[in-house]
Amino acid sequence: MATNNFKPFAIGSGANVTSQADYEALAALITGFQAGKASSAQVNKAIRQSSVMAYVLAQFISDSAAVDVLDNGTPAAILTNLKASMTALTPGRLLNVQIFTSTGTYTPTNGTKRIKVRMVGGGGAGGGTSVTSSSQIAAAFGGNSGSYAESKIIDISALTSVSVTVGSAGIGVAGSTGGSGGSSAFGSYLIAPGGPGGNGGPPGAGLSMASDNAAGSASSGSSLMFGDSGRVGAGPISISADVSSQSNFKSGKGGDSIFGGGGGGKTGGGTPRAASGFGAGGGGSAVGPSSNLTIAGGNGSAGLVIVEEFA
Image 1 (tube, helix red, strand yellow):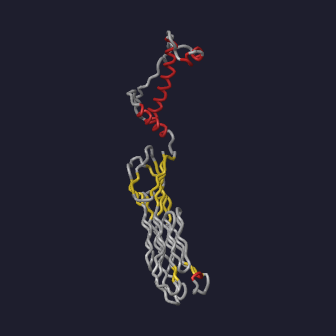
Image 2 (cartoon, rainbow, N blue to C red; image 1 turned 120 degrees about the horizontal axis):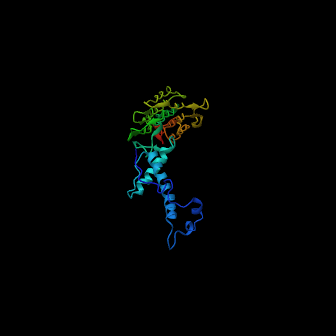
Image 3 (cartoon, one colour; image 1 turned 135 degrees about the horizontal axis):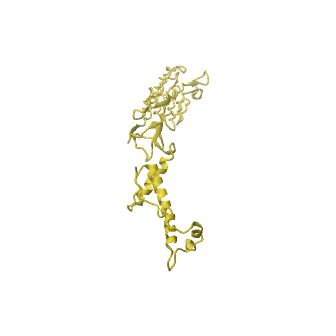
């Protein structure tokens, strides 16, 4: 059993203390004891008032935090234990939120007993386009968003740290399928794969689209509660049968994530749009006739890991 050095004074039956009514009427409550002598009963009452409250507070700390409360001249330690005891009596309270936008190490905030983790993998880049002839156009798919994952409540009573990986953004590749996003992970507890890049747009007399993007991979991990494989980037669209005008067709928009927006599609010749936020896909590239450029799609956005800490 934890030790409490702070003891109440003059609490025995028949203790020599002045009555409560007389104590409340005592002028010394306002002025303090002045020159002359205070009665022993009055002094004992004043000491008992403070010592009882000191004892009660110290015992609260000792019982709640299961620590010794010692009269050894270290009030800082008592204050630290008081804070710990108050935390111990409020289980389930949200203590802190740690947000990782780059790879690192999770170290629990003092007092944390359980955590919940949410994350998204890096978003894939939009597809790129190649050179076109005077009778050709090309428009590519937007990249997929990264997979989303959410954990069950994780008991971390035995944990000191966990490695955290934040998935990298997919980077556009000139004239080809966009780069895939990297996986985000919280140790082996939770893993959210990155989104595949958007397929490139082959040159053609019309929107001669490539096949749909590869499907994203499912989230996993020992503490997975919920997850999905991300949003597939959209394919290009034709606004008119006449594709000789740059404004009559548009590349595909990148897939949105729960934490970010996919890069928008662009009409022929426009600069591909990168994703915003976290874990979203980049927009596809689009070029009109007689383009002598090989263009990359818009970049995806990097992943994100959020750790919610509870008492």
